[in-house]
Image (cartoon, rainbow, N blue to C red; front, side, top):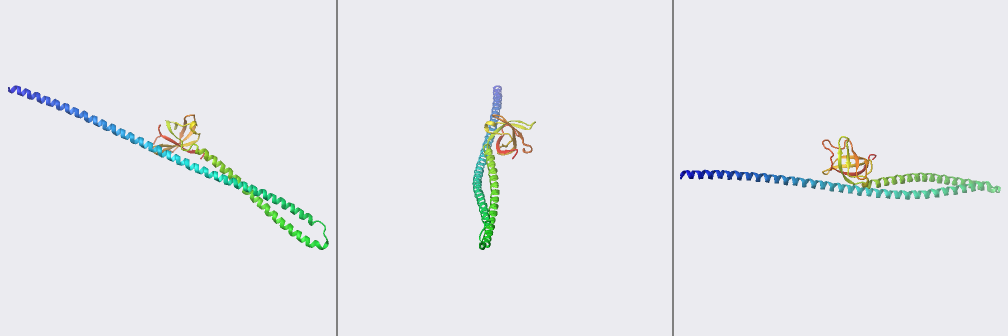
Length: 267
């Protein structure tokens, strides 16, 4: 009887040990699964945070581009107003110059007429008096003529300066209008060739990109470098990385955002 009890006790002890081991294994599995889930959650949170940062950076870049565009439009409007004012000044000066030239011709005619009258024969008693009056009239007319010619010369100089100003302003207006068309344009870097220091962009002729245009490279809301367009195709383009524009330790990579700054290598 005692022997049977001992056997049963031993079996119970073995069963208890097996159950304990199984429970421990189950707990370990559960812990591992929990740890895996926790890691997965953390990874998802990191991914969401990165996406949120990227979205914020793109939003900031868009707002910056919109601000640049608005400022450029205001500058163009201001230049156009200056062009209009300068053209009005040119028109006024042209009219003044025409009037002065007409006045000069009239004065020359009057002066010639007075000289001709002074040479006509008159009675002796009137010679001295008329000669004095004629001389005074001629001197006054000469002074008026000299003044008119000087004013005409100054007006001509002002007119030339005004015309030059109009030309400069029109060129500036055209330059700014050409720049605003592309400012704020965004795309991505598709590929990078570090050996030859160039990148391939998702923007091309269809988006209005032109050779020598400079673009800013951004990542996470920060500018990490600049590139300059070297060749343009319909849907993409190739650009060189501007030497010295990328901070030490950072490399431009596919997926980085590019924004057209509106500048060129000649700016």
